[in-house]
Image 1: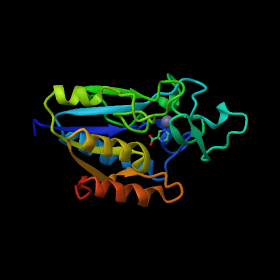
Image 2: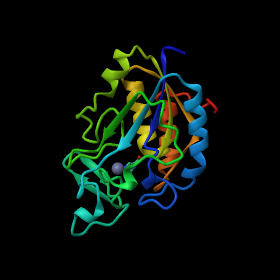
Image 3: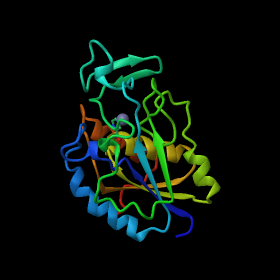
Image 4: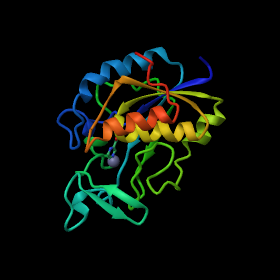
Length: 202
Ligand code: VGL
Ligand code: ZN
C-alpha cells in the first residue's frame, strides 16, 4: 500500500542473543521481521545509537546499577548495561536482518544526557528525532511496527506515532519484550488504550 510504511525498531546485535542487553526471544524474531520487510514497499529502520558514557548507562554513574530506576532532569529513567555504542559491532544490525530495502535509517539516543526509547521523541519528551516529518513528507498515513524491544522502543514509538496522527499497528509476533517489573503487560495495555492495532499477524 502506497500510504503504508513498515518501521523496524532496533534490530541490533546488542538486543539479540549474546548481546549486551539481550532481549529474550530476539533472534527468533529476525525471520518474521524479514518476512514483513519482503512484503512492504516502504521500509524504515531505527538504530539505538549511544555515544560512549551515555547517561542511560549504569556504568556512567558511580552508584549505577543496571535496570535500576533513577531520576533524571526530565523524570524517571531506567539505567541499562552499556549497549549500542556508536560504531561498535553491538550497535550494528543483526547480520541476518534483510536491510537492503531500507529507505531510511533513523538513529536515536545520540544526545549524551537524553535517552530515547521512541523513534519520534526522546525521553525528555521534547527533543524530536524528525521521523514524523519524514514520514509525513513521504505521504504515509499508516505505520506497521515490529522489532525490539516491545515494551520499550516499540511501544514508545507506537504511542508517539499515534499521537502524531498516524494509524498504527504493532505486529506482536515480530517483537520480543524485556519485561522489567511488569513493563510488557503495562505497555500492551497502554498501546491498546492509545488505539494501536495489536491484531495484525505476519
Ligand atoms: C531499548 C532500552 C534501552 C530498546 C533501547 O530498543 O527497546 N531499550 N535502549
Ligand atoms: Zn538504548
